[in-house]
Length: 247
Image (cartoon, rainbow, N blue to C red; front, side):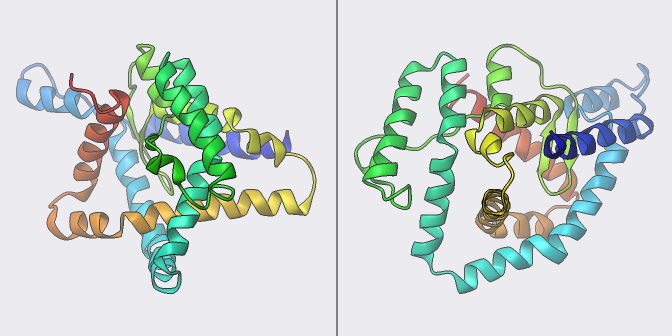
């Protein structure tokens, strides 16, 4: 319970800090500005931009150098194996959300992928399931809430995690509870704690390494990287929620 409290309290603190950081909605006499404000769905923009500034410092000092070192010193086949293992470990969360969304066909694929890759794939290091016609997909509880008709809520930027929303931040917490490894690592023991820390660090580094060129390009070419990341993330989330289907 103590570890759970340590994860919940920062989220509560963030919510408290958000209260004085609200942007003022333009008056009705400025319809274009008001429409843009509503479309951005970012009433906490002053606070979010401050958190984005913090994240950029964290990324410059820690995340991007770690991702570059990972790319330089770890051979591509090993990086692929690490990504495969991390994806395989997340299968129970994906399966739960497939079922909660009523996606029985995708749930079957997720279950079969986990079984095949855990056995034939040597614990998930290899991905024979894709070659056997069971491609990888991902789901999370934020997407599940969207499928259930829950609104996005206002936009949030979370240092270390990146763009999010009120709905997806809540979904992130539920996904933690859906993950069997979360409950296993609550048990006392250095080995289990080391496993949890290693998995978290590996996930952060592999995800950041995959985005090196994309983030660099936005920083280099965009007049307002914050707004570009916000727009790009929202479009990607809409595609994720629809599972790639057209509207």
